[in-house]
Length: 416
Image (cartoon, rainbow, N blue to C red; front, side, top):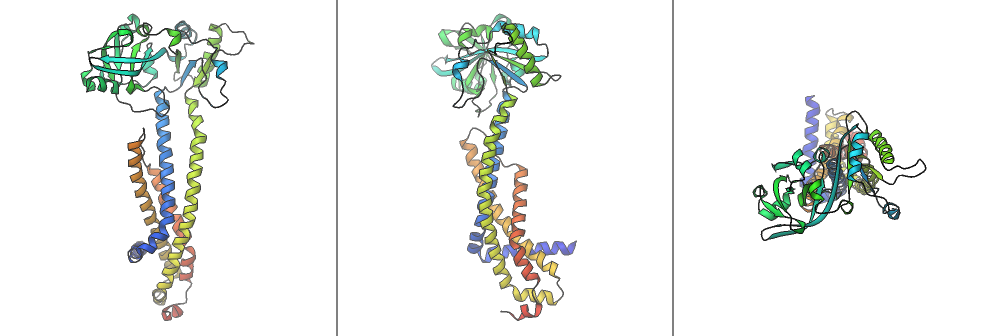
């Protein structure tokens, strides 16, 4: 064991010596490795960070949740908007009937929304999103109030003039979110409401869904005083419980909605059931394409880098030919000579990979500051980079190491 550790340590010192004695030559030769690792790590890290952000956004929309709407969520050039625009909007009365007809749903909520201003003293904010919802909404969505409280059942029943502010709304109006509690703000049409809570800061959503930082929450009954239900983009949210799958709940909701709207067997649905969990499949081809592009660029760079490292190892073998002959003369086996050069080649590639990894780390800091989601380097991607460096190093050094191991010691010692 000690012998093998000594071989590894010797090879590592030789790799560092090669890098120090021929910095420019070695760096230029390792540039392909550095760029290849940079491409792989940067692309995979960005995609992994984006996937995590998208999954978190989907989770905030509600796990195992079906959105009942007139619109089918999606888009594209062939989206038949003229088909959906004529559909009736969901109604509050349908929510009450669904609660009776679909007992397997863990939570069902109804909501409407609009955009208007919010004023406090001399401070005025425009384009603020108003969301008015029934009870159970906070059980479906990730609504975490860290200052004050959320609505109670009595607030939903009476439609009390209370409001829960988004974090950035509270900061812009009051300077500090903690100062918002129990203050009275003015909404659309001069309606005064009292602040009972502030939602914790969540950050920008990649999907453009519920932006709680720049929105306010109201009860549905109070929201009806601000906007008519049919003009408030109404939708019903239904969440499956632990004993039923999302697909099973979707089937039950479809049957219940067709019954409620008295559709005959020959009539098609005049409503849409949007499965939030299935939306993640929409992004899979996008992320797959980005992965293929990143790997293609990286593969080309690694091939170029492999030839560069192989060139270094050929030069190294030629420069150390007398040393190789001396080692073989005093009993060094072919396997030992070969392992030394393979390890040295691998360490050179690891040095190039570390340079690329350091460049990616700097890039993640820049991207995290520019983008709406944090970019990070997962541990499994770092391990993958090390494995790629080792594989590339061994592949690049196999022929020079083989040549060194098969040298005749007498001829090698006499060479200049």
